[in-house]
Each structure stands twice: as structure tokens, then as C-alpha cells.
Length: 269
Image (cartoon, rainbow, N blue to C red; front, side):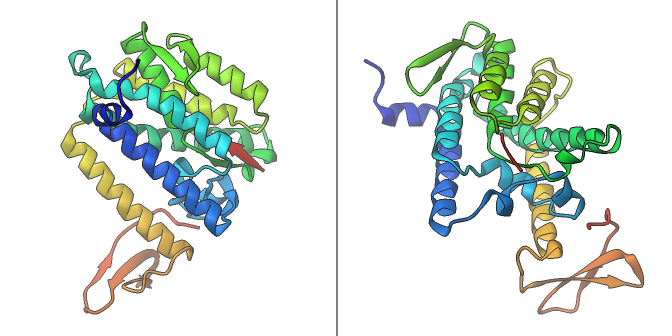
């Protein structure tokens, strides 16, 4: 008999919190009848300045099957939090989850850019991606390198050798779920190998908090600038040079001017 759920939650606090966040967001999406086009990310929305969608798309799921598959896989991968002796652990898990969310999303958009601009495949311009699978596939890959003897448990009764799980799951989901994002899953695998092989390294609590701060900043300003959400305390306007936006905090006279990049189908990931 396995351990009581309470003890497993205590052993995987970060994983449990992420599962709780994704599940809560799913319930909210269902209750408010929010569509994937409102929270997902696409090449077209990205070039229009909806950078906040890189975050909302990662934590949003539309179908319950999509949610259950990702969360069951993530729960199994939560063993990373207990592998301090391999240089992993809770801090490593949180730091590189942040890296996976951002870099896998950017890599997908980069792939879309090449397919659209180089190969003129306009289909990928409006493909909208949602889901946590980029991160899930990333952790599958990292664990397959760091502890290849592990198993990946899905739905509580399917067990796969972790050393083959990333590519097995990539092929399986592509065949069984036609809407599954092959490029999204592949980007998670690529970033996962980059982390596992040390090509992306050096994350500390300092850099993780700094990165999180920039994510929050870009998230808020892109929400405001794209008109997706109106922050009453924040006003963005042009000062002298129309290419340089300024930020005014309502209620005081201080204005911040800074340079920035001009803002301007569904796939399950």
C-alpha cells in the first residue's frame, strides 16, 4: 500500500501547488466559459504584443482529459523534488520550471516564425497553443538524463520507463490526440535536454527571483498595453519620442520612460 496522499503532498509541495493552480484555473475557465483563444498564445497574438499569453497559455487547460493527462504526469515527475542527492530538489525544481515555462514558449514561437517567414506556411500564424505539456515534457527529459531508472506513471495505472518517456509520449499524443502540439512538446524536450546537459545552468534563487520579477513586469505592462486588462493605477503614454513608451503611476507625478520592443486553430501543449 502506498503512502497516504497527505504525506505525498508534503513530499512534493511545489508540484502540489502547481497542480492546484492549474486545476483552479481550469475550474475558473469552465465556470466563466472562457475559450482557448482568450488565454492561449499564437504567433499572431505574440507579434501584437500579447506577451502575457506566454504565461496564461502554460497554466490553462480547456478539456478535462488534457488537464488530467498533464497533471498525472506532473505528479509522477514531482519525484524531482526529493532528489537532493542528485543536485535536484525543491529549489532546483522551481528555478528550472520557471526557465521551462519561458524558454519553451519562446522556442515554440521561434519555430512558428521560421515556418511562416522561411517556408511560408501561414497555418502556423494563427495556431493557438494552451497547456502545461511543454514543462511536463521538459521534466520528463531532465529526469530521463538525471535518473534513467525512474518510471513515469500516468493515470495511476500506466507506467513507462522514463528513459524513453519523452519520445514515447511525443509519438503517443501526436497519434491519439490530433490537436496535440508536436512543436510544443518538442520544444519542451529540447529545453529539457539543454538543462540536463548543462547547456542552461547557473540558476540560483537570486536569478530565479530576478527572472520572476521581469516576468511579472512584462506580464502587467503587456496586459495594459494590449488592452486585455485595464489597470487603473497604471497609464502608458508616449513622451517626446513616440517609439519610447512612458509609464505613469496614477496618483503621483512621476513618469518613467524606457525603451522597448514595439508591441504591436488551437494546439494542445
